[in-house]
Image (spheres, rainbow, N blue to C red):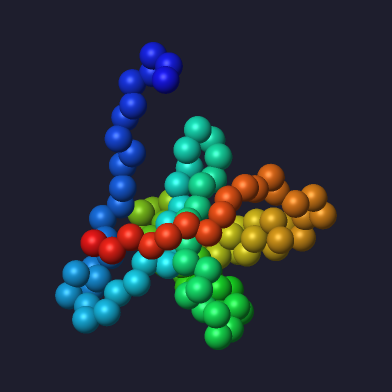
Amino acid sequence: MDDKEFIEPEELELPDGVHDAEEALEVLRAWIADGGLHVIFNPETFTHDVSEWGRLLSDVAHHIANAVELDGQVSRSDALAAMQDAFVRGLGTSEPLTMSGHIKGRVSH
C-alpha cells in the first residue's frame, strides 16, 4: 500500500420510499473512481426481458433531467436531448470499452 491516505467514499442516501417499502431490491450502483466508471448490478433483475434495462435507464434519465432542472443547471428538455445524444453515441461506438469484471454475490443488510 502506498502513502496515500484512504478516504472513505461518499455514498448517496437511500431514495424516499425504500425504508418503508415491503419489498426493495437494489439493481444498479455506479461510481467514478480515479477517473474511471465502476458499476455493479444484478444481472438477474430482468431475466424475463433484457429490454427492461433500457426502460430502467430511460426512467433514470428522466429523473436526472428533472433534478438538473430543479437545480437550475439546464432545462429538462435540453438535459434529455443531451443525454440521448450521448447515449446513442456511446452505444454506436465501433470500439468496445475496456471493461473487466465478473458476477459477484449479493449482500443482505
